[in-house]
Length: 146
Image (cartoon, rainbow, N blue to C red):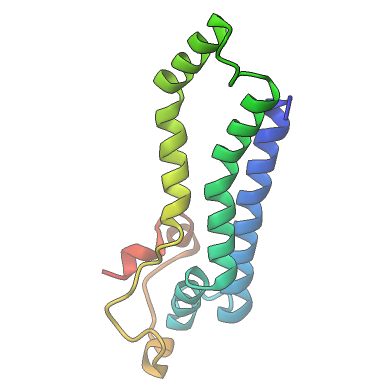
């Protein structure tokens, strides 16, 4: 916990694991045809799966836990020294906001978008969307659900 680089690597590894899991769920079950309804349906299923939720919880807990553990190990919670108080005040003022936003962003992964159509039907699986791989990479699936 002494190296910010290693702490960041841990977060990147968690993010990549979640991306790989979602890709495995989507591509492994829905194929590579991003224009098909079955692909979109499998992407929706992937975001509601148990594994996806586990990764969301891990991501939401990782950053705050690592920050608290690092502070504890460095003795920052010992407020008897004035520089510790100044450092904590500075952290709350400058870094607490981004930490909260990152944590809430990870928590938002727990709440999947519920489509207003029956994506489980055979008719939907046969549908064709005008969507390229570039659209797939740059456009979130949730934009198709409204």
